[in-house]
Structures are given as structure tokens and as C-alpha cells.
Amino acid sequence: MTGLVLGPVLRHAGGGEAVVWVETDGPCEVEVLGHRSRTFRVGSHHYGLVRVGGLRPGEPRRYGVRLDGRPRWPEPGSPFPPSAMSLPPAEGPLRLAFGSCRVAAPHGPPHALSPEEDPRGLGVDALRALAHRLSGGPAEELPHLLLLLGDQIYAHKPPEETLEFIRSRRDPRRPPGEEVADFEEYCRLYRDSWGDPAVRWLLSTVPSAMIFDDHEISDDWNISEAWVEEARQRPWWNAQITGGLASYWLYQHLGNLPPSELERSGLLRGIRASGDGWPLLEEFAHAAHRKTSGTRWSFRRDLGRVRLLVVDSRAGRVLSEGRRSMLDEAGWAWLEGQLSGGFDHLLFATSLPVLLSPGMHGLQAASEALCAGARGARAARRAERLRRAQDLDHWASFRRSFERLLSLLREVGRGRRGEPPASILLLSGDVHHGYVARADLGPGVRSAVYQVVCSPLRNALPPEKRRLQRLGWTVPGALAGSLLSRAAGVPGPSARWRLAHREPRFDNQVATLELEGRAATLTLQRALAGPSGEPSLQTLRRERLA
Image (cartoon, rainbow, N blue to C red; front, side, top):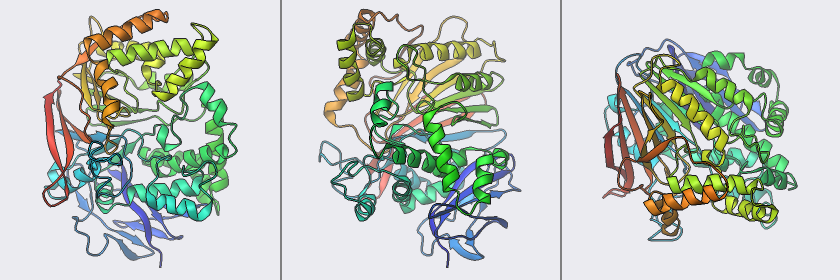
């Protein structure tokens, strides 16, 4: 009998319908609330996408999953409530939970300890803590959307179950070692990362949207032109990059798309019509890796009076030194077409923070100029080593893209693209600490502009790595960054920003935005171990943004 390998995962929800994603261990018909769909095959894996209609905002509907008519979800004896699906409200309060950077690991010691308590410690899993809190509360408190902002998996730090799978296939003493290396291994990593019962229940009940960062493929993926050139010399790179992009398309990207766009996808139609969709998906992934044009990973969701733009800041980069860009021209054209007023709130979500600490911003701006040869070839080589060692590849290290984005946001905030929203909120992750920064984009901007960073869900930063991040927010750190960028010949940024609180937070954490009318409130919570050993959440900060 066919069984579930992973899922159900509740993905796009809106317009009276929702999409449910599953992975099964064989071909079958998947049924959810009377709606049916045949699975499709990619390699040795089978996937189902069920389009469920007849839904109404604010009316949760419990559901199960049947495979070939036999119940397979919920699992017998599950301690969690029945899965339910609900649409975001057309009017009224909207709740959006978000975070990033989650390493899969056991939930007991030493992994659940802090890095101070044990060098192997990752801390308590905030995503799992969120699941436990929501499962014990009323359905009315569920977020309307869970937004995962990158590093949903760690290809170079797989959990023990994935490592055992790798060892059963090849010798990890040879390159690429214990790093995930091909499509089969990526699929296993997703299974082991999302298979925790609490996380599985959460993903079955709260609609989700996701975007990747580097760890979905490989550490430092696309950090620079030199990095890509070196990666392409590795014998295993082609299998790694195609496997990583193909698995991302299957496990994350498909569910970001509305049902109407899924129906128009020529790639999905081709895969469904084939006996095995791997050759088609492999060809697509290889082309997406070799050239950014023609592949768009960014997407939009309109949630009532809120516009959410989720923008790829990793795969679509132009990396040629001297003309680096976070997006190619097709990506910019798409973004400019989506950035508009006429909404109560504009959420610009991207894995990499647009606004770093002023000190780190200056360092990254200087790094870009030095790597491009502003102080000669020797300085460029040293700057490239520093860029990789310190992950200096955020928006600040793409200065022209940074300023181009700020210019577009100013137009929105000044009402040149329709009635300005009450808030423009930049939502990001990646940097393994959380903060809220208030930005001043200049005169005439009528929207409140904030950078909100929530990271990590589970990958606590060791104490020695926190010092540089703290320093960047201090007056001496900001001055040092400014001096570095000036010495490299880089002008200062056209905007100013500062922390809205005393210092950044380095906890495993999850954030929730509550948007009602033109008001916006942010709640930041950290994960702790409860008295009974179950994870819990403690509120660190609740702040009105607009």
C-alpha cells in the first residue's frame, strides 16, 4: 500500500482555493476534501499537488489525506490537532509568522544546548516551539501565512539520518565528503529536515511561502564570480547544483505559485505527462544555473490590503566584477512592475537584509570595491578571501542594486506609484541575529520604513562571532565602516537607519507581524526549553511599527 513520505504541506492559499503538496512512496491518486490528483514521478520519487476549491476566508476546514482511497493522514495516535486549512481574510487582521536559518538536528542534548553550554549546541528549535504553542491554542490564533526566508535546509551540515544515507551510497572520505551532493541526497535532506512530527503538523496547517539562500545548495553559493568559476571545476558540481535547484523547485518553489500559474507551467505539464520527469527537471535546473535570464524564483502574494513581494537575492545575481547586480534586468523589470502603492502595507521579503548595521554596511561596500580592483590585484585577492570568510555578499556589497532598490522604495513611499502604504517593511533573515531598524529614506516619504530581521530559527551563533555583529551597530563600528568605504572610494548610502532598540538579539527566534487596517505590530519571540522538556516561546519584544 502506498504511504506518505513527507507532507501534507499546505502551500498557496487564496482566491477560494489552496494547494496541498505531498511526497509518496509510490504512484497513486491523492485525495484531499474530495479533490483528487495523480502523483507525478521524478527519478525514484513521487509527488502530488492537490488543488482544493470551495474554501472561504475565516472558515477553517479540517482535512485528511487519502492515497488510492485509503486514509494516510492524520497519522494514528498523533498528539497534534487535526490538520485544517483556511484562507487569509479579505479584511480584518492578518497574522504572518516568519524566520530563517534552521539546521535539522536532534532535540535533546548536546544539540539543544546553547553554544555556550556545548560547542555542538544549536539551541532550541524555534519552528518546533512555534508548532507546539500553536497546537495547544485556539485556531483563531494561527498565522495566516508562514514565511520561511532562506536556509530551510543546510546542504553542508546534514543531520545524522542524511549522513547515514550518504554513507550507504558513497565514501564520504572522498570529496565532496559529508556535504549533500546530488538530487537523491537533497531529497533525503528535505525528508529529514521536515519530518519532525511537530514541524510536519505546522506545515500541514499554516499556509507557507519560501525562498532559498545559499545553504539550500552549498555554503557561499553565488557569493562571487570567482567562487562560481572555482565551483565549476569540481567534478561533482554539476550534479550538486542541478540536484539542489531541482529539489528546491519540487519541495519549495512549486508551492509558492498560485494554482492558475501552476496550471500554466509548461515544465510541470511536461513532467506530469512523462513517465519520469527527471530529464526535464535536470535540463531546467542546469539551464537555470548557467544563465539567470528566463528563470524567475521571486513571487508575489496579495493578502487582502497587504502586498507581499518575496524576492530572490541569491540565484539571479549578476556577478561580473565591476557590474555586480543582485538581480538581472529581467528581475528588476518584474520587481518594478510589482512595487506599487494602493495597499495598506508593502512587505518586501528577501533572504538577505537590505539594511545591515552601519558598520557592516561600510565593510561590505568597501569589500565590493576592493574585490573589483579599486586598490590593485593583490588587494583584490585578499578582499575576496575576506568576502568568503565573513560572508560579505548582502545588498550592501551590491551598491548599485542597493541604491536602485532604495530609489524604488522612495517612489512608493512618496506616492509616485499610487497611494503610499502606511508601512514598507523589509523582512529578512540570514545573519543569525534579530533586529528592527527604522529607516529614513529622505524627504517626502510618507510610509514608515523598517528593516525587520528574524534569524535563526535554529542555528545559534557562537559567542565569538557575535562581537563583530554587535560592534557594527555601535558609533565606533559605524565610523570604522564609513572610513573603510571612503578609503575604497565608495560614497556613503543615500539613506540613514538605526536600531529601534538597544542591541540585536542572538536567540533562536521567530517573529509575527499583525497587520490590521493601517496598523502594523511586530512580536519577536525566542525559543526555550519548557519545564517538561517541550519547547516553548518567550516574548522578547512587541512593537508598533505603524
